[in-house]
Image 1 (cartoon, rainbow, N blue to C red):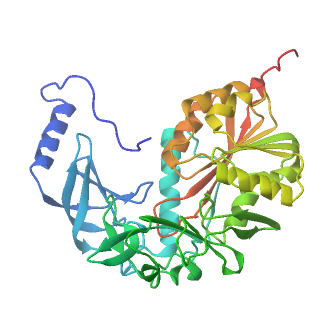
Image 2 (image 1 turned 90 degrees about the vertical axis):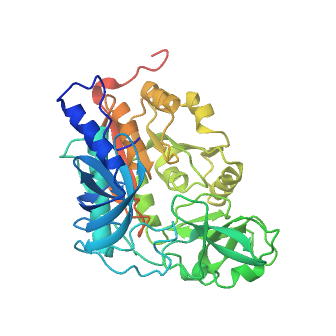
Image 3 (image 1 turned 120 degrees about the vertical axis):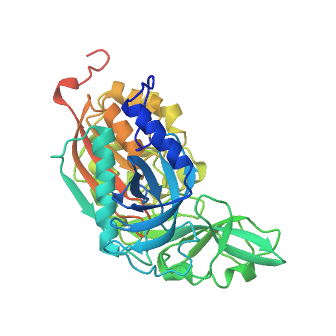
Length: 423
């Protein structure tokens, strides 16, 4: 869901506000460069400035920056721009530590001091959630941050052959152009140390995308298979539970904050039956199995589901069932009034069908894990009549980028319990 203002609707009347806006838009269309001051960061990490009321979104800007910008994209209700010159820097702006920042599309906020990043991102996430999700200002909110550098234990690299040489790196911002890198300070040292030598291990007919994952004891997994690179499974300890997986599986990337995330999501609630939807390799399913008599984990990716079964078996969680099906196809099997449901969907959020079934089946407690404030806000608003949001926790799982992970704890309103069939 977009957090941008919506364009005006209805007829344009002479002398009306819409007429003035149309003139402003026409004037903006005639300008290539202009001077602006950045008001704030928005969810996703861009800075927001205004030209006679029209929002202008500027990557790699900072609140308080006075900038000369070049308009690169004009829309009826907003524009996008790039920085031509920093006329006066905002508070907290710094020289980016990585030499590839500005060209590489992996990071958005290296130009801001680490503590300020967390503060500004949290404010932007909350503004989006409150405005689009109809959440009150009195809602309890916690912010959890960890190590801002050398934290990523998994990454997706891209490759290209140029003049007979193999290059490895990341795509540039909003482009498929490859930016070749030989270092990346957000990666854990075991991964960063591979970058300089990796091109020499690849051939022209090798993969154009390479996923890498580091487990405990510096064990490496890669996908697809590349001769000379380890491609098997690795083990990861999270709290007192151990997970097995490989580079094909999704897994949260911030090594230090994984135990915090699990504790916040799972909590100390207990009961008869819980459901972990979009379960992956069982990151939340395994600890849930300690609190509930029966747990069902639903995961559409067959590789991840296979590892989830193995992880459950290794920990002897006999009452943990792993269902290898897409959530959209399984969701009708969710029983009415389940004690607990956890959802951790992709950036697109819950589909309308999944939202509808959750509203019909009405689990007592719903925990929503999200990496996209806009789609989370949309889904919370849709579920607002049925659920009360008890707490939001914002975790900075992606330092140096414009994103945060949000955990929303929801409880069904007392008056909306759904009668079971036959009761």
